[in-house]
Image (cartoon, rainbow, N blue to C red; front, side, top):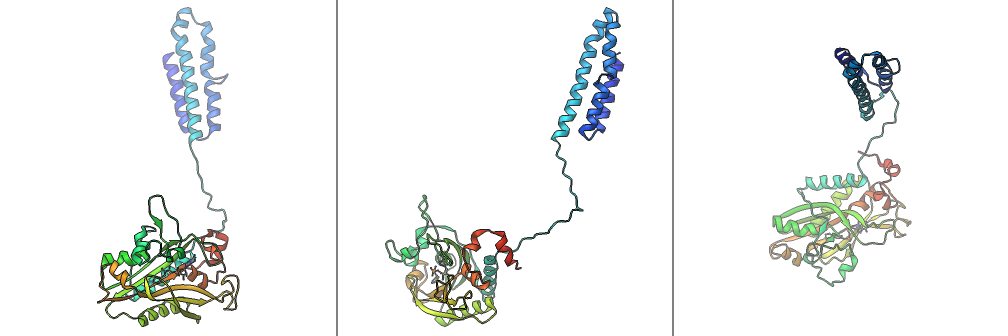
Length: 335
Ligand code: FA5
């Protein structure tokens, strides 16, 4: 009897090992523990056994049946837990692939141009101290210029930088003079949003410090960058500006590509879009960076990369660029 019961158990184990679907296991279940199964017959035969045999085999047969049921239930559970992923590679599907964001493209273009001119690319922190974002740039506390660049002040005493100009100080401290760096990055301002103002946008900073650096050098770099990025005739105008960290300061505007300079909602009917702030580095800023203004001069510029992308790809509202709306961004599937 013991051998017979053992054999039933072994046979069941083998059958279960081969089963790969729940339906197979259910068939095995009915074969091994169903009404017409061998164990059921053995159980039925108990009543005809002598009382000695009944005592001897009764609990053994019952326990075997319980074991068989346990093995079967365990197999069903295992199959349920098993995740079967199958790929049908015959299905015809629409292949969608990603592409670079327009701001990423112009950032790469500008940095490539500047790299060829000998600029080193550096990276500054987006969470910045008041010192690097304002004070060292000749904007003391309570200076009205802080109103032009309101930002998000953090609980830890830091702020989200309003401009990539913080890199000017970091770079002077780190590398000293002579210096030729550019620093693309994200900037933040507490700003009223409109078609050409975002609260989160990108700029690229440039700074050159050497002996005898002049405004002509600055203009040459700006012209080279813009003519290479646009690769076609564009109208640019230079006008006096004000930045506490440059003297003299200039702003460079581009004729609005959306309306051809005639005036539209994108340029708020001005016909021009402000693109670049630049100028000769203020002596106080050189001093803050540990450089002697009696020996060295420098120029610096900050190009609005997000606006540059707008103008290059004729995007009439800056807010699309941060929207993450794939349907819109798909239109700029440019490599
Ligand atoms: C500055 O941020 C200066 N740091 C630029 C500079 C650097 C001057 C070095 C002198 C020397 P401004 O606030 O004008 O300047 O911003 C520079 C450019 O960033 C603008 O011309 C514009 O293209 C872009 N910009 C500014 N504010 C926004 C905004 N809210 N949304 C999108 N682009 C903006």
